[in-house]
Image (cartoon, rainbow over all chains, first blue to last red; front, side):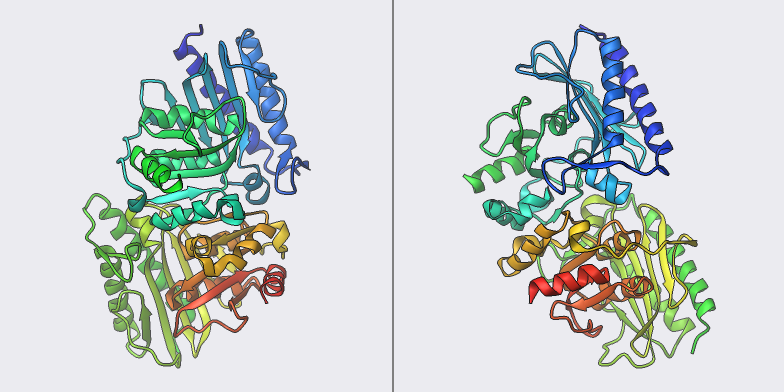
Amino acid sequence: MADIQERDKLIKEWIAETAEKIEAAKSERLNIEEKSARNDLVTNMDKQIEKALTDKIRTQFPNDRICGEEGFGDELEDLDGTVWFIDPIDGTLNFVLQQENFAVMIGVYENGIGQQGYIYDVTQKRLYHAVKGQGVYCNEEPVEKPENKSLTEGLLATNSQLMTKDQFSEYRKLADQSMGVRMLGSAGLEVIELAKGNVIGYIASKLSPWDIAPGKVILEEFGFKIRQFDGTEVNLLNRNKTIFATPRAYDEIMTNIS
Amino acid sequence: MADIQERDKLIKEWIAETAEKIEAAKSERLNIEEKSARNDLVTNMDKQIEKALTDKIRTQFPNDRICGEEGFGDELEDLDGTVWFIDPIDGTLNFVLQQENFAVMIGVYENGIGQQGYIYDVTQKRLYHAVKGQGVYCNEEPVEKPENKSLTEGLLATNSQLMTKDQFSEYRKLADQSMGVRMLGSAGLEVIELAKGNVIGYIASKLSPWDIAPGKVILEEFGFKIRQFDGTEVNLLNRNKTIFATPRAYDEIMTNIS
C-alpha cells in the first residue's frame, strides 16, 4: 500500500500542473463534442487532462486501477485494491459556456473505503481536500466543521433535472421546506458549498462514481450522509441518484420522501 | 439635473465605504428579523447600510427621492424627477447563511429612465456598473457585449419559487429547453452572470423595484430585454414577475409561455 503522505504530495503537484494547463489553454478554441445528450459535453481539455493524470498514476502506481470520466481508465467490476476516481473537469457545461465555475477532482479508495479526496475550484484557485481521519483543508488551512443544520434552517442545492423532470416533483416539495434552492452546475462545487456550511444538502438525480467519490471522502470527515435516494450506500461502480446532507437534513429528507 | 460624472464618483465612494463597513462587521453577531416569511430576512446591516446611503443622498441631492428596501426612502407614487433605488444587501439569505454571495446595488433614474446602475459583488470585490450610453464596466474595465444566444444554447437562471411552486410549472418546462438551470439566490449576482454571458436569461417570480432597477440599466446597455411575465415593461413602483434575457432568448420564452 502506498504511503499516503507521499501520494498526497503527488496529487497536489498534479492538480497544480493541471490548473496551469487549463490556464494556458484559455485563449485556445475548445474542441467540443456531445456525449449522451445535447447538454452532456466533452472537450479536448477534459480528455487531455484525464489522459495526463492516468499516465502519471500508471507510472507511479502501476498496480492501481483508475475509474475516469473520459475512458482512459479501466473497466471496473469491483473496488478491490487501490482505485483512483478522476473527473478531469467537473461542470463541463460551465467550463464551455462560462469559462469558470468548474473543478478538477481526484479521489483515492482502498478496497472501497475512501482515503483521499481532492476538489480544486479552478476559478477561485481553492483546493479542498481531505485525508481520511485528518480533517478537511482549503489551501492547507483547516476548514471548520459546519453546524448539523436541519432542512428548514438551510439552503438546499440540487441539479437542473430535479427542477425540470416530472418524476422528481416530490423532491421539489422538499426544496420548498428548505430556506431556498441553489444550483451551481458542478457536483464538486456543491460539495465545497456543503463543506463550508453554505448549503445543508445537495440532491442530484444522476451522478457518476467520479462525481461522488472525491467529495464523499471530504464530507465524511464532517459526518455528513452520502446515500442513494432509496437510503442505501452509494455504489461507486454505477450511476447513483445521490443525496449529500448534514445528518439532520438527511433524516428529514428520508422521512419526507418515503 | 446633477452632473452624471460627479454622481458616478460619489456613488463609487459610497459603495467602497459600504463594503468596508460590511467587512468590519464580519466578526460581529448579526441581528436578524423575519419580514414577510421565514426565508425573507432583514439584518441590522441591511438597515444600517440603507440608512447611511439615504443620509448621503439626502445631503448631496436634497431634491431627489429614494426607493429603498428597508423603509428609509420615500413613499413613491410616480417616478418623476431623479429617483434612487437602493438595495443595501441583495441576497440577504446568502448574507445570513453563507456570509458571501450577496451584492450592494444602487440605481439612478431620471423621469423613469435608467441613467446609472451599480452592482457590487462584495465577496468577489467586483463592481459592475453602467452609465446610460457608455457601456458596461467591471472594476473600470470594459465588459464585452455577450452573444445574443438563444434559449437552447445557454444556461437559464431562476429563483427558488420557480422550482417549487405549482403555478410555475410552465416555466420549468422552459428551463428544460435551456442547457441547464442555475440559481445563485441574488438578483444582482444573476444580472452579473447575464452581463458576463454566463447565462442567457434570468426569470424571477417576485422582484421589487430595487432588485430590478440597477441591473436594468446595466443590461439595457447590451440590448437585453427586461420585461414582466406578460411581456409588458417592468413597473418600478411595484413588484414584478420579471424576465431578463438576451433578445433571442426573450422571444423564445414569450413564444413558449403564451
